[in-house]
Length: 214
Picture (tube, rainbow, N blue to C red):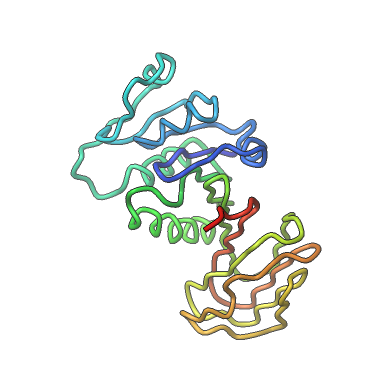
């Protein structure tokens, strides 16, 4: 398996879990995502974008990263172009770091939909902000290593049929979930979390680290 980490422009905090997830992966930065390379102590092999959001005062090693430059007016986001570059280089697994938050909600929503499309094409995808993670859910069964008490939700991108959730405070057994339903929002891990889906497409959103106090 060839894992690439794509540094996107959304929010990112450094955690031991994130360090483990990106360890040994190849790195590509998408425009302003280069700033996360400094946070994580990484030097990308490629920097992709139109470079309209370059952080000031980059250290010399990051400023010298090879660039693939695109015009500001284009048909794809810098993030999607960076993902395409990773796939060209043989990526079979992607960590989309900085996929949530940031100044552009449209980009964050795109990353959710794009992750599902990539998963359907056979690419393993993890979206992360360091504090929150997203994993595409397609037909089949998947298990997760989250600690007891971890908050998670399942966001349906279609009607879900045959959804079974075990290892949770509120388990489900072969339920049908209407598109747009909040039934699967705000659950908690109890033991080993396993999710089986008969039909549909969804995204698991989990919070391995506590939410900030309101």
